[in-house]
Image (cartoon, rainbow over all chains, first blue to last red; front, side):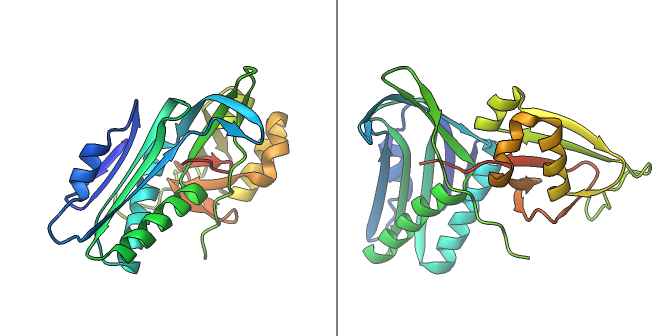
Length: 152
Length: 93
């Protein structure tokens, strides 16, 4: 399963460019007074080294579940109206969006906080990996973050 | 299927182990099907895999396990039929 969708939450792992419009439409509801949109893009330069493209791989079913779990956490912490995470898989050219997160809520502060939480936690524990291909044609799996061990 | 004790009658523990990214390339496989005579912990599984697959040994300290798609502590006991994913540090986003 690469997708999880309810009337309030939407997770999608997809190959090919991400369209922003359907994402914004999904979170744009009358009870919300704010939409926070985060777009993560692939960067050309890292420590002086030039990246040509990136390749993303996921443990897809678990990644979708983990992101849905993050939605449950944001909903406990803040009065979120709607939330979306769309993440790319496969090859992503430099400058393209690799991840888009959208959160709507009645007031902007909650939307900012929930959106920030989602991207920070996604990077820490959702089973997705990226490999950089550099201008010299070398490739390298990006050194990531070891997910936390669950309690108990 | 609810609440079934997943222990096979022969007492053996069959595991499907999933590997991704770096480990997938190092092991040249995305799935390993293993069978043990007794139940074992995640810790014991990782130790055994590091012996069976020397290419994995350097990464042993940076592998988390997810049992049936949930992160688990290494002391968790694995049951017959469990799916165990080996998760190296993640780098999504």
